Image 1 (cartoon, one colour):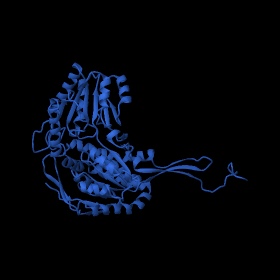
Image 2: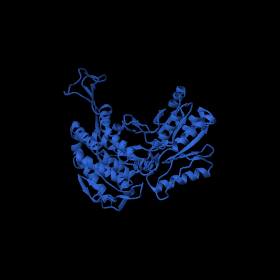
Image 3: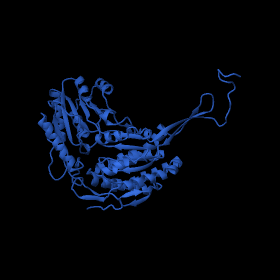
Image 4: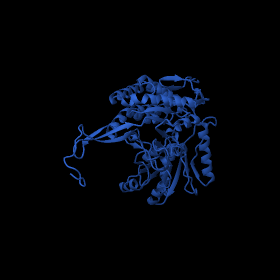
Length: 493
């Protein structure tokens, strides 16, 4: 059933109707319209930024403990409404309920993690200054920051920017993905109930035009984005020459998972499937390339993974029994993935397990395994869905070379019983997240999250989000002005 969200914008503490074009969002599992409203126009975006700017001085100067108190009330509300919010995530993004619950749990846990990170990585430090007095390190918020949210984690990922930004004293204008507006609306309503002052957090819904109006507005002091490489590259170009604005980009990856000298085939199968197919392959840390040895050992690994993948239940979130994988986000995304598979086959790839689309009307895709070893000039692209490309190599040296053969550098992993191989892999791999005998998708919010190359711009989020939410101010001070006892050299008495 469609939910009409008018008013759909939250500006200066008031819910308002957008003055832009009408748009809607659908449940990817069944095609039902779940949200409809009007996008924010340029004037609406401008009003949101003005509201944030006006709210900024008081919010930045508010006692830190008072800001923490509001954040902790938000965490309590997340806990009280976890079932409701998880259902909203399932409806909006197509995730199974069990996975949506884990997302709400991550949102709740982000509060305590952000507070700890703020104190450890920013906050205020005191020490002795050279020649007497004090050396003090303070951190100040940037001002008004824009947060762009993705569709694959419509609650958790924007929350990972918003929480540390508010904690540091910034005010936020939040633009969620147009594919998942319902989760953003539900989350902002919880922030409203938590007692945020008017203008501190503003919500502007909309499509590309709304995003462009926000990103290009001269009134923002920074932009925090999690999403696709093309959009991140566009933002990077748009911010060129604007030295006073901070841009934090967490983008995708063509992530390698190497399996070598691994005896437990059940573990190999489980960890590979969890790396490649959780969230229907729609995690930026998902394994995209599986690198295994030639010969019987590699054959056995692939057979075990194939058998495990065949056991996965792929269905709508409300299916009984509950599925492991729901749909990808849209029919457009499903069409693109099926076309990518066909292109690989036309280029010489061999299908091990075909990624299929049981219902042509819906974007439900079964997991796919495809051997691309013999494909010449393989394209280095992120296929954001449940398709895993297999590459066979003769030596571990070749496995490392293949793993690093990408313009990205987000995640890489090794499944192996050989500690010496791990020591080589951790030193020679080029990625910001490197796991050993753990799924690639097992990233921790208590650690930095980000990568190198086209996977970002060296501003990792998660625990290190505190770093880009505030800027350091170094001070030497003493409470009394005192002349030195003697003149410096070169000065006559």
